[in-house]
Amino acid sequence: MKIIIEEPTEQEEDKVIIRCRELDENLLRLIQGLKMNQDTIIAHDKNMTYMLEPEEVFYFESVDNRVYIYCKNKVFESKQKLYEIESCFENSMFFRASKSVILNIKKIKCLTPAFSGRFEAVLKNGEKIIISRQYVGELKGKLGI
View 1 (tube, rainbow, N blue to C red):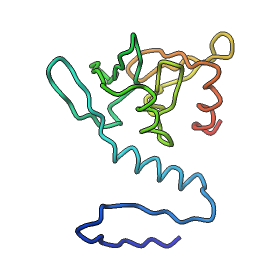
View 2: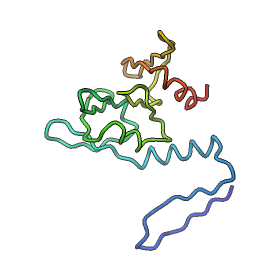
View 3: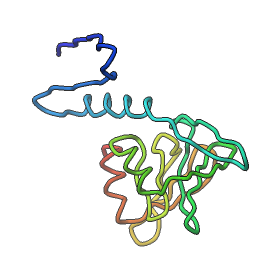
View 4: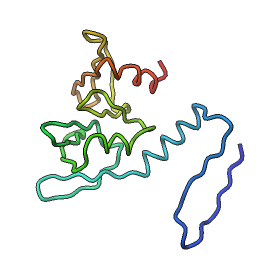
């Protein structure tokens, strides 16, 4: 593999171009790492606005037309819709766990099978999230199992 680093002109924005014959697992991990580091999540709590790193987020949940961002010890609100968040973090370590939850795989402590083909994820902060059976296949694909 050849790596070329070029400095853009002042009018150009920074960009990463990947040219490959096949998108293998190593390249996918590299892309996921780049995506996780470039995005910042805007979060709100009362009258304050916060800039969160994706690594801080355990999961996003939609409740009564509002989207909440769950971190280790604090819950924030997002102005984005769940489908917009999903779009921002596709091909990253976030995945849709149910119609109302997008989960950070890196925050899963353990998984156990649940009723009707669902899984239960115990997160590193002790919370439990149910993964709907229609999303279990995506989870297995991301985990390589």
